[in-house]
Image 1 (cartoon, rainbow, N blue to C red):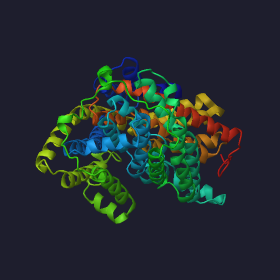
Image 2 (image 1 turned 135 degrees about the vertical axis):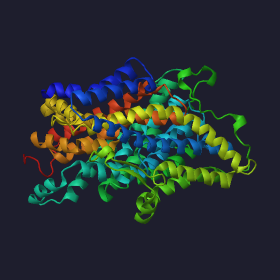
Image 3 (image 1 turned 45 degrees about the vertical axis):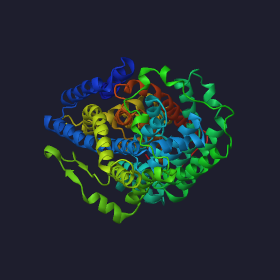
Image 4 (image 1 turned 45 degrees about the horizontal axis):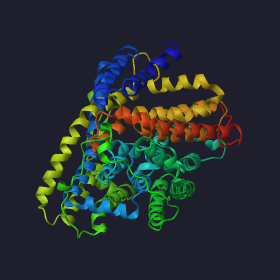
Length: 569
């Protein structure tokens, strides 16, 4: 089988997903079983994977699905708990007091608060937290998911305390072999990784500064009475201010401190600066923008998460700090459990591991309920019940919240039990009877051969495709970093810059990752509209990978960005 045929076959699951979800507008509930079946057949027939390895990959995917659902359940449960304690009403009023403008609210909740959560947790948690919070303050469910997914871009490369770089790039490269070559040029491995980190931060910093502007434009164009792009641009000064309030400390931290803290520090700084600015009317638009009356909303905008007046416990005396304490506790626990080794060891001590499933080497998975954000979100819910529930019994609040959350979780579980096993089949296909490269690598090689010297333009797109498949920047980096490295050497390009392009593209690809969309949709009860979400999130994804590709091309051919290992092939 030649490389072109192999590459085209490898892209079949991606193409089929796009056709069914975007073209035919199937729901993920209907589309993903078909995609999983086709991927399994291709793995067995074209890649000659053993039936045992196919089965092991599916089982591995199911274990990972439980982890994802644990996070989703925690996010929904916390929100439902706040609904029944009355805290949501206080939070909603608080945002209205900062600004009644929905564009401003989206920027503060998603961009400022969401980027901080991404820095602490990663793995889709920001969207799972931000989307239901936006619905709670009056956003249509589809708009909330769209904005929540758009967070999954700039901060993602340094999400989960730098995991996509620290684990994804580090484990995705042949560190031993590369280190030897680096040492011959007077470079150390740590310096090489730091160079990649700095270049990732700079590229993200340039592109990401405009993301709040794009958020506002997407809101007004798709969810406004006038369907106007211009109404989004009316907030341009404030949105750009919010963008650079995050990206300036983000870039500085990446260059000076490394990959662990850019998103954390950038998110904290932007939250403090932007909220203060909004309260004082700094750069605020002259007109206030809002969604049309709810009675006129399209049915496709609505999920089954609805905060009704009857559901909310009247607690007029609750202070806004008390209302926010559960989210602050979650944010604090996320940081502590990831930064301090002793605490991390404790939270990961309760881990259910499945090693070498069905005897297949390397096909493993584990569940750490205390370390995963789901466990920490449940702790936040318990804190909420303890400090907020005064007029309603604590048991009643927990029962109602559990009941509502369980119903929402069932539909998401059905979709994810097909989506994530498909991902694992794709990734695990490198071990096969015909000794050919894995499906992701085959697809990437097809792109590389097609574009040749224009490869810098397409390098971020390869990273994005990896994230689209895997739902993870980290996994995309593990799949493609070595491939990108080899491609850079063969074309006499800077390996550090091309790997940085991979990492940036993989971050952008999270915006269209199917199982991230499903998980975020589940938190607001918006199942069956995954295609509608993807048709919108593909816009900022194209913006991101195209901009990144142009910047990398300019870096290579105009600004002559160098670094170690250039021309060593």
